[in-house]
Image 1 (cartoon, rainbow, N blue to C red):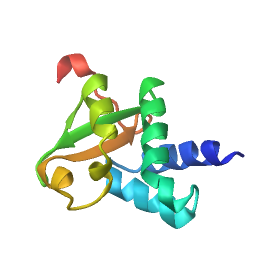
Image 2 (tube, rainbow, N blue to C red):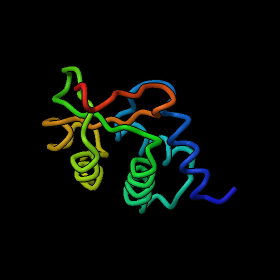
Image 3 (cartoon, rainbow, N blue to C red):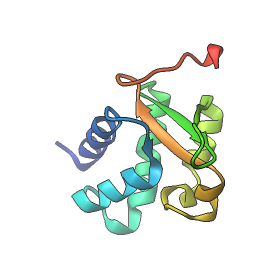
Length: 113
């Protein structure tokens, strides 16, 4: 299995558990050494955006510790591109924590949110 396929599989597997904060998946990828440590955020962001575009994940967000809400794909993509969202307690994370979930675990029809 290629490194990219392993990264995607790890993201999808972790996303089966619950809403996963972006910093948590970035740390998991570092610990598992799936990508070069210097490119973790870039690689995770890219993989999450691909999975979002394929409809395999949904992205949620909200102020910590309030309940997050599902985002439309355009808003989700914009937040997935913010490097600070991948670090716990960064200014961006403190304002708005971003999560993802594998749609096999949880899927919310955005027309009803």
